[in-house]
Structure formats: structure tokens, C-alpha cells
Image (cartoon, rainbow over the protein chains, first blue to last red):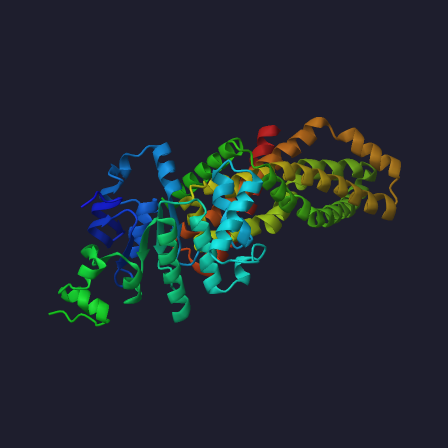
Length: 249
Length: 250
């Protein structure tokens, strides 16, 4: 098996008395869509935030391309952040900025591109994501699905190697959910980025993910390619997939 | 413990904000944009409060001075009170109410809706991006607004003293120019500069750290509490620093 692009080794995290991650071991491979599933509140978003650096682990190690992320200096961390984009659950679009300004922000602030080049790049990305004629609108003037696509365009504007999706279909109707999943699948195929999708959209997520990991009680209890994952005999996983409450004792 | 932690956090926030004003690339357009918001858009309220404060000072001063037959000193009393004390203090309090509350609320909403987290994920320093242009704009705006307040206040004193109560206009103007020395003007501007740092730091940090409020700072209630706290703390600190600077300058 090849070296994982991102690897969690025995990562632990707690907030006060609440243990969120209790020795997470997870491998994410280059060029794949990895879905992280689990019950609400199981720490999936916290796991994702560790990758981008919004949260720091209490113990354990995180590797990117074989290198320990804790050992990265300032410039290495900057380079890493340029390669990774994060799509928030609620999009986190800047409500005081237009759609164009939102999408352009990462390259306006972090690149030396001219205004013309920025404009060209934003327009190209908007066209690729079928966002026509809305560049001067504000996020509040858009539908939920449209906002999601704007957030996606912003995440892709820097041509990232890795895109992290934090429950990208939350609050969408079934048609929109399917369309977001299709969008992730299609653009991942088109741009070739590595995607990590935190989701509890079962079974829809299995259609787009090449690899699935399940987080339960602070640990990854199963991770494998989707086909093998679905063959599991682990009760916790089966019950979760089938939407059944586990009866203890 | 919470107070010490909060004060330390706010001081570090201010230091980082000031340092990032001078880091390249310059954020000139953002500074201009915030100067428009803090300075230009506060002019209306400064014009009104400046004139009425001067008029009240003229009225009160006249009826106090006339008892001693010194109503001719009204120009001195109004000008010195405004330039040394009321100008910088009332300007800062008015800007806190108008722009400071808005900054706290805006950053608070950005915090709870993860917009500040989004900046971090894009490797954009949120302190540099959100706070530094505001602090630079405040440092530019506060002294100018204070000067405007002082001039309009002196004019307000002239309206009541000379135009309504009959003090010789020449004497009023003469007393103003004769009694005010450069040290008074400099002292007033020193105060306004300190107030600009205090108000912007307190208001922006309250919004920026909404999520770290004691008792939880999420949702509309968290933003509302941050805004209230920003205005109250700024107002109290303005009076505290006013006393401190006056004590140091005298």
C-alpha cells in the first residue's frame, strides 16, 4: 500500500472533561475521496479541524506526505495551508462581500496575481461550477445550494491538493444533497484533489467515496475501501448504516 | 484569573494589530474604507454633539461667571474645557457608540458564523485582515474628529455667549485665542490618540473573542453581550485614561 497523504497516529483530544478523540488512527490516500462517517457529536468535524490546524491534538501525531506536522516550521505550515482548502458546514461565506469577492479573497490576499488575472481565474472557476451572473450578489441573496457552490468555488480557487468538506449537505433537500455529492465526485475527478468528506448521509456517501472510515466513541473503528467497508460484520457499523439504535448489555 | 487572562489577551491582540499595520503589503484601501466608516460617517453625530455641548457650556458658564462679574472669561472657560477634556472624551464616547458597537457586532457575527475560522484556513491572518486597518483608521480619525468637536463646541459657546446672552464677540474670540496654548491642544490630541487605541482594541477584541466569553459566547446572545461589554468597557476606560493622562500632563 502507498504512503498515506494524511495520517493520524494515536491522536487524542479532549475539551475539558469531554473526550472527543481517544487514539484516532486514520489514513487518507492521495487522489481519493475518503468519507468519515459517524454519529452526530462523535467528533468528525474536530477530526477535520486537526488537519487544517484549527484544533491541536493533546497527544499523538499527524503526518502530511510522511512528514510530522508538529515539526513543520512557519514557512512549511504556510506551504501546507496553501495546499489545503476547507469547506465549512455552514459555508462561512463573508456576508459583507459579494460572491466575486468571496471567491477571489484567497488569491487576492495570498498571491501576486494582477487584478486581471484574478478576475479571469474567478470567472473561469465560476463558469466551471455553473455560477452564472451572480458575481455581484451577496451570499444572503442566494439559495442554499447556490451558496454551497460558491463556497466550493472559493475552496477550489487556489487549486488545492486537498479539500476538506465538513458535512457539505447539511440543511439541503434530497435533490440538492444529491447534486452536492455529484458535484464533489465530478470535480474531484476533474481536478484530481484528495477529498475528505465528513458526512452522515448514509447510504448516499458510499456512492462517491472510494474509502470510508467510521468514527465511534473517539476511535476509528473501521476504515477500508468502500466495497470492503460495506462487507463488514461489525455490529456498530451495521447498526449505524441501517439506522438502528445499538442496544447495550 | 479570567480578568488577568482577558487583559493579557486584549493587550497581545492590540500589539499584534499595531505590528501588522506596518507589515507588507500595505492595506491602504482597507484603511481608507475604515477611515470613511469611523471618521466620515461619525461627523454628523460629532457636529451635533459638539455644537450642543459648546452651547450648554456657554449657558452654564455664563450664569456662573456673571455672579463674579467675569462673564468676559467665557471664551477661555469654554475653549479650555473643550480642548483639554470634553472634546477628546465626548468624541471618543460618541465614536464608541456609533462605530465601536458596530465593529464589535460585526466581528462577533464573523466569529460565530466561522468567517474568522475561514480566514485562518486560507492562511489569512485575521488580526491583520480585520483589526489592523481599523486601528490605523481610528488613529487617523479620532484626532480629526476631536478637532472638529473642539471648533464646533467653541462656536456653540459663541452662539449662546455672544449671540444670545450679549457678550462682546471680540472679547469672546480674544479670550479663546489668548488662553489656549499649544500644550492644551497637544494634550487633547494625546488623549484622542490613546482613546483611539483603547476604543478600537476593546471593541474589536470583544467581537473577535466572542466565543471565549465567560458563560459561553455563541449565537445572537453572545454577539449582543460582546457589543454591550465593548461599549461599557470602552466608556469606562476612556474616563479612566482621561484621568490618568490629565494627571501625567499636569
